[in-house]
Amino acid sequence: MIVDRRRFLVTAGLAALAAGLGLPLSFDPAAAQTVEQAKLIAPAASPLPEKALGSATAPVTVIEYASMTCSHCAAFHTGTFPELKKKYIDTGKVRFIFREFPFEPVATAAFMLARCMPEDKYFPMVSTLFETQKTWAYSTDPAAGLLAVAKQAGMSQADFEKCLTDQQLGEKVQESALYANKELGVNATPTFFINGKKVSGALGIAEWDKELAPLLAGK
Image (cartoon, rainbow, N blue to C red):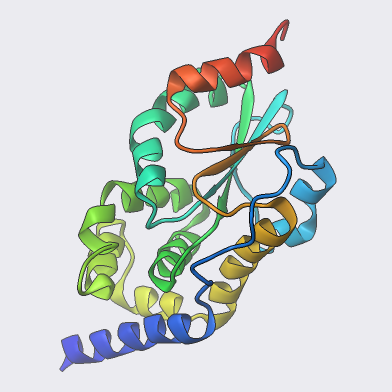
């Protein structure tokens, strides 16, 4: 049956991720609270094309490392991020870069789905995945949950299966997280780098105002 074939292929894809790509559940202790810009923008830091919002000439660059299965990341993206985007990103004050830091294969799979979307659908897919996180991230059948989200976003079943069985894509998603842990000291999500300053936790908009004010003074 078609349903059985779909479930077999997707389950096989997730199993492959679990066997070959799953990150350890523990990471090296956090490093220094400020990171050199060279390390943040090194090619190894982003083995896949960078995903960013805002002006490339913005005075402040914010890099977020998130996991798609992280509830605090979901709370930030569904609660605080829209206001942060409206106030700072859309006005040219902040360039926002989003990077993958999956803790388990299901999170890797979700990131892969976002990467498989057309360029202009990447961030909308990220938003949708965070908004629907409870329906797939902790489900007994995450493949079915992710398929439902993918179809909602306009992805065909065939493309969904092709995406989740792309071993090379999965490996590159994981490489970003491994580099962040070893070189940047990231060991939790969400973790932000604000012009190189490391800040952990889902900051509220008032906390963002406090962090950004001195960097934007007079600009």
